[in-house]
Image 1: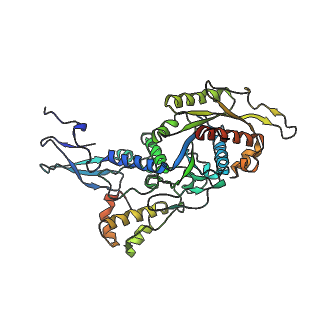
Image 2: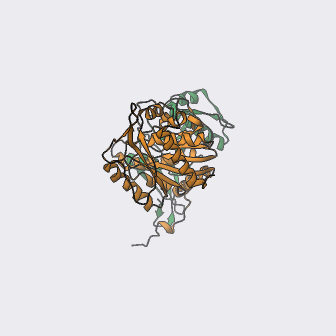
Image 3: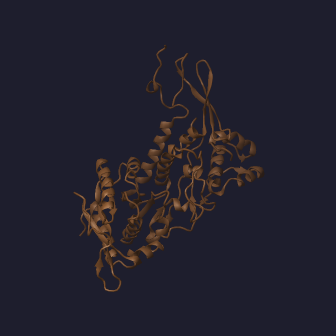
Length: 295
Length: 145
């Protein structure tokens, strides 16, 4: 049989030039994020731990400190950041080469799948063949994330925060897209099950060389509205992870959650509650990590 | 993916792309030496896998548009979710072409207008017509639009 030349022996730059097209996307992403000082992600691994509510308050707090902040809602199928930051309502303006982000509480810039969907109860549904969608859906979602990052006109930002969906593996595509990802904050609740799952996220982050800024223990207790005594919500009083600093413990505060869910990040209105103080401590820790000690 | 003409030991070049409208794709490759042609046909699943990368098999006819992937793939996008701002030096649209564009879902319409507009502008065409849309559709990957 005639000896054939192999793939790498043929020249690149054919009409399709798929590799070239992908390289253009990577360059566009790099150019877009060149004006962003620091990028970090808030993740958990486990769902239902209050990660997005914390992200919204953290973003609002950093913006309230005079910083320019953007939030990318990386939870494409369960988006919440536009609602939590009151950034929904107006159509997004599309210019020749970018899409203007929505602007929410405290001036935080937001990009979220929620801003593109037809209605409140509308789920994300993709075109294409509807059988065996697992074959292409992951690729499509990763590229959608890339598009959100690279096509949004973020402008100059001090901080871009990514709110990741639940799932221990969700950090991997983000790391691929953003080699300059500055770190992650991990949210947990003080339960053995959460510790078990969140621990896997931490291991994966470490293995990928992503700095772990610390963990936040949400729902660390319950403040009685009548007597002020703090009671336990979970059997464990606290969880810990080896070599990972605990940034703060945030007790369950119904008003904090209710206000934030209504698009009013509670840290702006009540910065001195137990939870508000915790959010401020986390914001300070983030700034110290990225900007160095502050006087 | 590359195609090699075994007889000539020459890399084949893509020369024509067709989107029949059923989710499949047909791409014709020609050997530059002997001019032999072959067609690569993909089924809807294979086409979708390529679409998911947001790359254009056969090469891009015009630059990629903002949010092109999500706009072309999301079925449940809001009619009024996006507001496309006018670009510079846009061609005019014939009444019939405008009417056809009006049938495109609102979530995608602005992007489709821009894609046809840029295709026309690159070729020095002053007016977008139905005939021009028919000619450009496969180039732009705008199946059914």
